[in-house]
Amino acid sequence: METTKSLYEKVGGEQAIAKVVDYFYKLVLADDTVNEFFKNTDMEKQRRHQTKFISFALGGPNQYSGKSMAKAHEGMNLQPAHFHAIVKHLHDSLAHFGVSEPEIEQALSHVAELKDDILYK
Image (tube, rainbow, N blue to C red):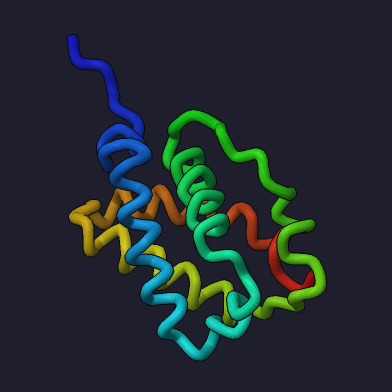
């Protein structure tokens, strides 16, 4: 009997997600809509946090020990346009690595749940 794999397992676990995150930040840092928010960011640390966060969002182990979403985005006053740009880059990054559209939608639904903790802080 086959057990249902989590999206985390289907994608290939944390190593595969780390590659998605690297590609994601290439897109983000090339986007003038949102790259200003990362100009004073330790990107190595940011990539590690994001890999753990996305791993958890896709059903992997919860190893994320960073600040709460509200705390992490405090003082940034992120607007819906910024949130949508990030979501689009995450979508495109997952698609780039062959994740199917229904699985991408599943992953993005987890991200959408955090919208209120991220916007207007």
